[in-house]
Length: 546
Image (cartoon, rainbow, N blue to C red; front, side):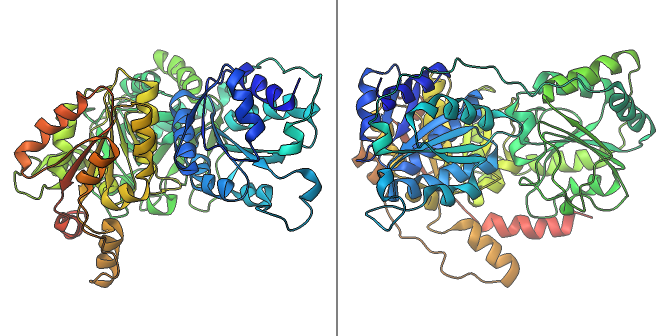
């Protein structure tokens, strides 16, 4: 059997049915082997699109997404999406072709040390130097990618190795699990902390959403009546309609929920990672006990020193805690009622503003009113991300997806495209700024070619809006943030998308509904946005938060 055929058989044995990438000379054997393999391949117009799609596949399914590039520039183009998968906890396996082994030791055409390049942004990076080790390498790659906190793996396959013959067979798929039985002493210690705490908070992070821990977390809250907050990446595990929700934290401004964290004496962190929101920003005020529940041990940080660590399957751990709580239910009085009401009122204020260009709150209210609870909104990175985190009410895990680990611009369109491909019955919206849209416009070509009808809502202000906002907060002026005034709707139409530019706030919801009805092409809606609201929010919170 040819090594490239074996490689794909091993991927198929692990349950892989789809790959994303760009063909090249040094991955040509794999590309030809794909013609007879039970794996589909989406040809992308840029390797970054392939990596972002693979990362979203890994996040939504728990099965590592597979992206492919050739050596040199193909590998470097993959890096941004691979790094995003690593910091955002998405299982991903990147495959790069490489020059023949006889020239890897010297300067040669397109040859660059991909292993050293990828090591800082992956959990494991390796080169296959014999076809006989392919089954072991691929089995290990899957185990590493999904174990503990999920992340990225790189496999480099030199072209001469891919062309060799071998007689070894694939290793059957092995089911790996993070499930661990928590010692009764840890659960009893947690219950004791709850009983002796006067102002506890449940802080939900990316791991809680990634493991879809909604049911067990909500049952835990029924038992305990805790107030709950969530990071950008933990949205939806607890509905924004939960009566004791303190809503989203980590804005970068001192938002209202921080008043509760200052008073809290116990913070139970479920699926929380420091890449989401540094503990130096919330471990303030009253001295507090910290409990860490996650698939991986806590990172060492002077401001994050848990008194209890529970490591393993998050849903299983919470279920074990709930079993104990059933017999000794703990109820807490509404100790943060004033703060919660203040936050709730502030978030819902001015959401019906009909001025044009549209205000951020109005845009997000119209999207929330249009989408079902199970539909998916994928936010790009920019000023709009802050508004999505603060204002958009998620009610289920994995329905409001925000990269807040690596925070790479340009990921929302490839991510939304993959989400729509995986779940064609759901409405899927990518929300991005004009800067992020221009960074990843190549994704639309892939969407058109594959007839994937996801919707893109572009907040258009002709600026790198978040950078301008932060410059103005720190320096009272901004520098070099302007973008070209382009007709982005016309560009999208030329690519083959359904596209419209909003001319009045009353038209947005109607056009959004029209876009969601498209069956065989992406849609792009360009919405002029009034980003004067950014600084107004900054000054408002300075006046409002105690």
